[in-house]
Length: 230
Ligand SMILES: [Zn+2]
Image 1 (cartoon, rainbow, N blue to C red):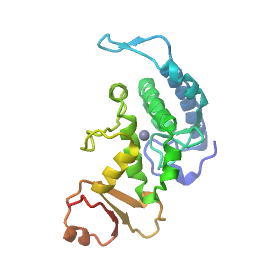
Image 2 (image 1 turned 60 degrees about the vertical axis):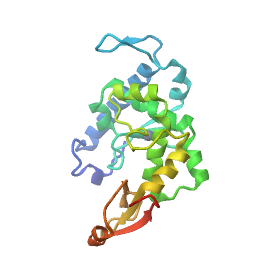
Image 3 (image 1 turned 180 degrees about the vertical axis):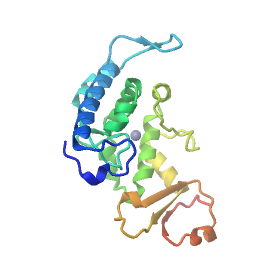
Image 4 (image 1 turned 45 degrees about the vertical axis):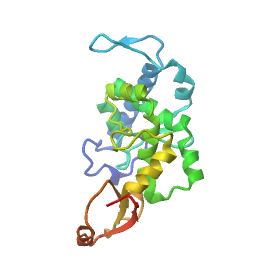
């Protein structure tokens, strides 16, 4: 794997040479493979309290369809999927995580694909600045399945559901998205030298900052304010 030297600089725990990066990518790929096998196991295992933990053998066809791609980039701290079933992951994150957590990550990401979130986003025409809200809404839809949500949490997955964002359970991600749009303020930070991409957008949900406080930040431009925002 070829690395852009700039990516390595100043990022904690990142490998410092091309050789180290290649080796870490190789090991992390192997570990992700082990996590996939663990996730789809038929035999149950026991947790530390002696309770049965079941695998997800029925997810095996979906898991096998994934293409695992190690990627070093500061915008990819953990893992994510694209619409072509490629699962990108940060090798540093993988090497620091347990197999249980990685299997939960794989399962969570698979549900983004099985629930067709990329196609729905394309159809709905989600603007770039709303990508964060869309992702939160998509996660809430996945975690509407409370048994799944509890299982992911048990494996160390730090996810959110409707309770974490303070609203009632909604039918699907479109409903969550509208709810969040009502309650969110999104602003663009303007810093010289930083290209305007989605990283330039900041999102506040349930924000109660006054107009005067906003005005005091000279480098921000409010680009969306939901009607439910005080
Ligand atoms: Zn997600």
